[in-house]
Length: 99
Image (tube, rainbow, N blue to C red):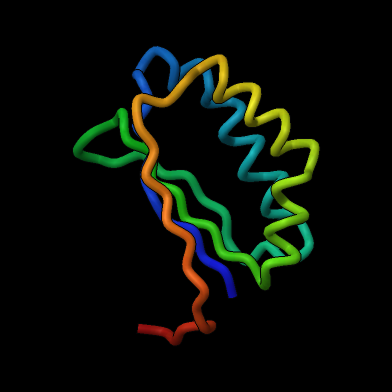
């Protein structure tokens, strides 16, 4: 399993402009074959920070996601609403277990 976790800091005004694209990205990504989880969330202590958690069945599913039309459209939205910073980490992991 592939997991991507991290934060994206975006200006509040730009976040409002990008919100629809963020929701669309989540919905379309969740519908992809091999997507196990795809979530953006807002940090409760700092609303400019988005938390991202993605889980993919394997590298092939993640590669297909990167080539998808909605990913290309999302990249265009990010160009127009450039994040202040982005810190994302990719992990190869097992399926985990309930805590």
